[in-house]
Each structure stands twice: as C-alpha cells, then as structure tokens.
Length: 415
Image (cartoon, rainbow, N blue to C red; front, side, top):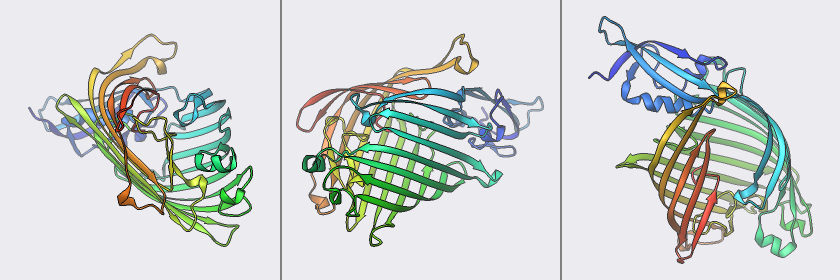
C-alpha cells in the first residue's frame, strides 16, 4: 500500500477562532510537499501540543484518477480561550505552601496563539504580574517575542542562611523582554534583556546580596537555543528536546560586579516493546567571584528526587537525571460528552504504569566535582493523564539508603 503522496491542498476544519496558518506551521507537510501517512499521528500530536485544541484529527483523500496527489484534511475542536479564573495552588510542590488569587488569561489572542496573562496571588510568595507572548510576527519570517513584568515577595529557600540569620524575604521586581526566531518546525534561537531589583529583609543583609546594602540592581542579558521534536510538550510520546540558556547578571549599583549562569537540558522519548522509555537530564551552573543566595539551585522544592522527595539540598550548581519506562494501562483516549459549551465537550484521559530511577546532586564551586556523592532513588508509580494537560502521579520510591516513601504529585517529573 502506498504511504507517501504529494499534497495538492490542505483543508482546515473547525478552527473558528484560530487562524489556519497557526495550525499549518506545526505540520511537517505543506502544499506541494511530501505527505507521509505514517506520520499522521505525529502531526496530530504536534497540533494538539499547541494547547489550543481538545482534539485533532488528520486524514487524506485521493482523487478518482489514481494520481499520487492527495487532499489533506485537518480537523480541530477548539478549547475555551478566555478565562477569568481563581488562582489556587502550592509553591515548591508542597501542600503546606498555599497561595490563592485571581487572574485573566486569553490563550489565543487574535486567533494567533498569542498569550495575554494578568494575575495576582496572596498567601505563600505573593505576586502581581503581567505577561504577553506573541509566537508569530512578521508572517513567514518566524520571529517571536514576549514581555513580562512582575513583583513578588519570595520567602528565602536557603536553609543554611536561615539557620544563621533567621527567616527572611526577597522582594523581587522583574522586567524582561525576549526576542527570537524559529527555524523550521523544531529550532528556536532567542536573546533577552531585562532588569531585576532584589531587596532582602532581616539582619546580615551583606550575606544575602552582592551589594552590602542588601539591594541588588541587576542588568540581565541572556540568550538561548532550543531544539524540540516532541509531539506533546506536557506528556510526550516521541521526540527529543535539547535546551541551552545563558545569562549575564551585571550589577548596576556595586563596583560593576557580575555573575554568569548557564544551563543545559535534554529529554528523549522512544517507544520500546509494549511501552515508552523517557529520559531527562539537566545541569545548571553559576560562575563568578560571588554567587548571591537568591541565585542558588535546590533539590526539594521545584526540582525533586524521588526517594529524597522532601529533602532539601542547596548549591551554586545542580545536576539531575531521570529515566522512566511507561506502560499504558489505559491508553490515552478522547471522550465526548454533552457539555454546556462545545469547548469542554471533548476530554482526554489515560493511565500509565511507570518504573523509574532518579539521580542528582547540588554542589558549590569550592567543592571538587569528581568527588561528589550523588543521591539516587528508584520506584514505581501510576501517571493519570487528565484533561487540559493535567498530570497526577501516585508513586512509591526507595533511596540508596533503603528508605521508602509514598508520593502524591500534581507535577510530572519531566515538566
């Protein structure tokens, strides 16, 4: 059976609000190019991964002449895009660190996948902020940009300094502008410029910032590169991700001091036997004469090692790795029901059984890297794939000391 054709035309169906070119730019084919029928599911997942649709279906039709050209049809069911929403959650994946507030989100502004977000929250680490993202400017040139500004009061995570000087906060005001270009389907290159004003509270402020005043005013210049072939960013089935970023932080109010941060991340997904092997590895480094406390890296907060899930580790550098083998228990399916609004009528569900192993470590620049002892954990779990890109994980893990723990987590290990 023939599995490759030439595309005569592409017909988009169901996109009442979303512009057709926003869907087209995610596809691996276009008019006049080759259409590989073995990649239909991959292309469906690419479009679904934009977060704009509940379901995507692609099919093709040949004409009666038997030629090698086909008409390709792309059908989508659009999500609800405009939200006035309550904010409720917990910081650092810790149920004790609750925050609450409200926000406004337009996730498909002007039908071009532009994002406009205004939000505020009280409780743990309160904030107020605004963000705008335009992933599609200058037509076929594939340029994109984003602007964000926010204020946040952050409770310091540095346990070593809290033990010495007591609990303190960091008042952060941040403005950032990012401009970049997308090359084809998978590659993005970007640069950014911004400003940070960080002021700390409490005693011994000279230990908490680079400036002895306890207030650092920082010019931040950054750049990065991203290569991403994953089909669905939230819970991929296939593809790889390579991400590199670099930031120069130059103080404006203290002797031209500066420090540099850089990082790399790799993710890979491949179907093997009855399941899927998923891997993630990352490293983040800091360089400079003095690295401020507010730029330290941690395990035990946003990043976790299963087996040491609640144990906090701090450093100027961090390395982590995870490997999972996922076996579908309930294959991901779409369910249609009679909802009050069409945008909520199609929902995705699934259930995977996972076997996993984690490894990681933080360290300071004065430590010898090759003499570090790494934390290790392993275990099993269930990943519930829920509508609107929610993942619930129920897991049991053991560490290399033989201690076990049960874990309930609403954030997948690869996000």
